[in-house]
Amino acid sequence: MPFLKVTLIFALFVSTFAKLPRLFHPCYSNDLPCLNNATHSFLSKTFRGYPSLRIKPVDPLIIPSLHTVVLEGNNMIRILNRDIQVVKLRNQELVTYKINKRKKTILLELQVDLAINSNITIGYYYPKTASGSYFALAVVKETFLLDYEINDQNHFEIQPSWHQCNVVGTSYVEMKDEEGRKMSGLTNDQDRALICSIVDWAFATVIDNLRTVARVYPKSAFLIDI
Image (tube, rainbow, N blue to C red; front, side, top):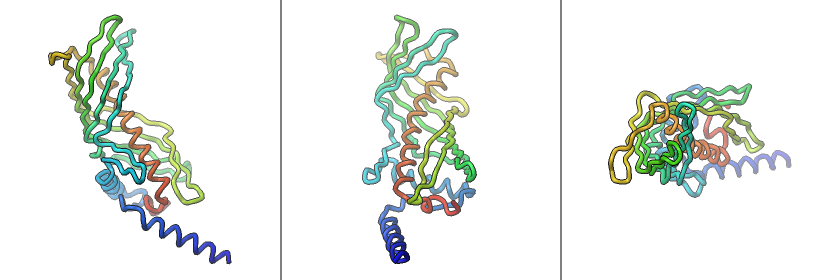
């Protein structure tokens, strides 16, 4: 009877897994080209969202509003971006994937060439403010350290423990006032801080989608050797 029970459970598991959409293919944990191709496959099929699996859209990714504070000497500049649209997030490249089976951590680096559009209000110094449109082009590398566990159903449970954003090279930023005239810009460091503030929010959705998929698919759908 115990054998029959295990067999039935396994058959149910295989049947359920077989009904799931094939969004990616499994890889060995040290095969970066395979993992990168699997990432491309997943994003190409889900970037608009996948409601039946509760996967959120990432391209375009919409952020209603975001407050950011950047420094200028001893002063703080408060920035409000509204109606933010991040595009080209589907074109992510997996730069680094390192799994530590003993510590149960995954180091993940993703790089993407993206564009950002929004409305912007900059509070330089009270009461001085400026409002208009914001547009940025940047290559961004987002690094994550993820903690993972494997639950009783052989699914990954993933929790981000640390992340860092870096703008690679020189970004292009354009700001115009409400009459279409060019606004005085921020410094390069302030531009990078603002871009990373927006990108951090965008990648939070990317990681949330990864956690969602990990709850649905067994670990064997992702990695062959874990």
